[in-house]
Amino acid sequence: MSMQESSIPLNISMIRLEESTVIKPFESEDKDLNDFLLNDAKNYLKSMLAVTYIYQTETEIVSYFSLLNDNLSRDNDGKPAWNKVNRAIPNEKRRHTYPAVKIGRLAVSKKYAGLGLGSLMMLTVKNMFVNEPQRAGCRFITVDAYRNALPFYQKSYFKFLTERDADDDTRTMYFDLKAVP
Image (cartoon, rainbow, N blue to C red; front, top):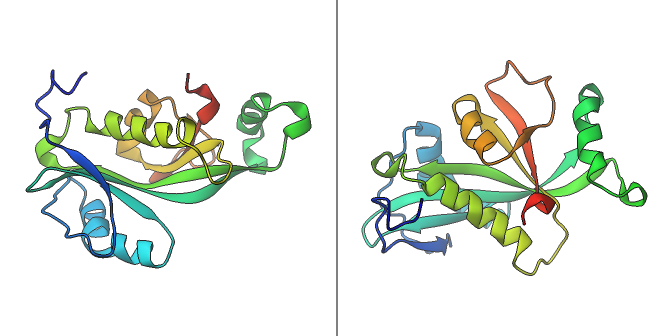
């Protein structure tokens, strides 16, 4: 879906949240995600725990995502999944952990839900770590996905790391950045 084919405003800009950023109105379907943006995102930035990126118009925030450093580690209960991860790594480079970036939060305003902004943000994150110069190695994107968001991440080619969390409210998923063409 191109931005012209949808009803996403064409005047959206992406900014990196700073301590001085004025947070414009935002409301998603998830109160926890709303609360993070309004009350915690600047504290995470100040504490150097996560960086938040905002898509906004002149008057409102339409979506946002937060990123933090992570690693993909072998879970002894998830040996079959770990074997899939390792197959993508040359034998001489295989490790027990691999560098990753975690999507800590990702939300779209109720007003703009279903218009492709989630997919746009996912492409942005992948592009940030594949096509832009990196300051440190990063091979994977991870996420602890809410159960209702699992189809979105699966559509974005994320895989489950383990089946141990199959009945939990969140599932650990990963995406191999080498899969980006």
